[in-house]
Length: 227
Image (cartoon, rainbow, N blue to C red):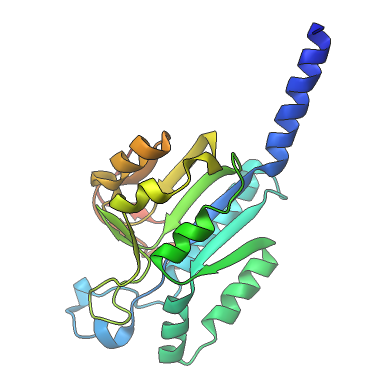
């Protein structure tokens, strides 16, 4: 095969890969105030309902700056958490989230449980995910999509590190960048992610603080970030 023809095929392959590239953002739900108000103030979570939503939209802006104004965004959001908090606060949070997705031309995908998340995650095309971000509650072993919604300080919807082998690793670009913005992920879950996915998951080595997202700043980790 002539060298020029080989080069042309390689260029066409790269263009095809690029056209399928997308940026996947996963957003967990907030706790209910009715449970959090029983805790002492320093241990309370989610006084503001929109911490994870606002962090998601800040990340969308970063991605568009880095990858272009038309970079495809896919936003997976845990629906029951925002339905429950919306009923508690008397606010149409799910409508507002849909409006934010439309405004940013992001593909919004609602999910309702850990197994439902896995199923929808695995539908992404092979090699398509260039970046992955998780915003939500977590501990060192799991993404907790729900935390303190139905039961105080308890999660009923999660992705445990034992569930990671159920995720289709082929959806990722070989050079994909993955980050969990939840607490403590870097202490265990990141290792399991890298073993199965064959790409690193940057995670917090301690608590993650969302106190400044309302002022336009990304969350930060009290113990730094590890991979």
